Image (tube, rainbow, N blue to C red; front, top):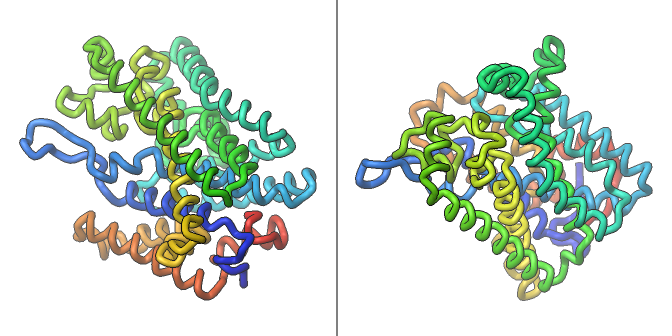
Length: 403
């Protein structure tokens, strides 16, 4: 299970750090409330976790996956890379279906993640310019396709019937594969928590970013600036559009969100079933996390790119001196599958023991545990157990930067 050193000259530790941020962000979203009552008790407002990580952490997870696949596949012949990606996709789907049987309230991303790997395998031979164009087009056009499909299905079946019956509303599991495979596939592709139709854009964006000179300070600076501006612009446009009383009324009428909770719901997606607004003017105006709307994809993709840029800067500035303080985060990012599945299993097994804990205490235990485990594995120069299995079954040894 031995792996290459974290600080090998050829390893891009900024990508590990970004993956660590994504992992810790997703765990935080799973364990902490996204909204809270305001200090004056009159409205709901986003929590710090809700503001920082909702929708962004999972999008970052997918973008970094694309970067890793780009680096990994560049050291292989296209046919070999595709076979490895197909095997990884299969393993992730099976693991995701197994995790669907755990007693948690978490929307597990692994099945969708596996299908994203499968989709990405069709694009690995494109040039950097072609990948950039396809990724940009996918992020902008796929929401339009999703909206058109949803409106068509709602017209044929009725809005409530489509929203209620053409989505699983739970994490996919083996029972769904056996009993309702058609609904399972529809959920994974179009209506689930991480619809592959739109989320493929994140992975394609990562594939394009992986072609850049990620070891250069200039690259980190450009990604931080460009991604940050895209994220801020999408939020600003959405906020400007939602000054419209008509749009606010449309959201409240279709979703049932109360006026005092509307702004928090638009910023976090908490307490709002946005499937009822898909294709409407308010949906196109919203940058709500996990809505799959155009402004949501631009916001989350931009934020993900900015975080990647910041992590690259942090691990390359001053000849990488900050890599040592960041070692726990880098180590955690080097074993994301083990820590992600591990926290799901822990939530399943320890639910009774921790049900009286406060949210901050519970989150602190999980986050500190992830960082400590990451540090230990980094110092031991070992792969995580699930990373080792994925590596052995799918690809063979690669250089440290080609992961």
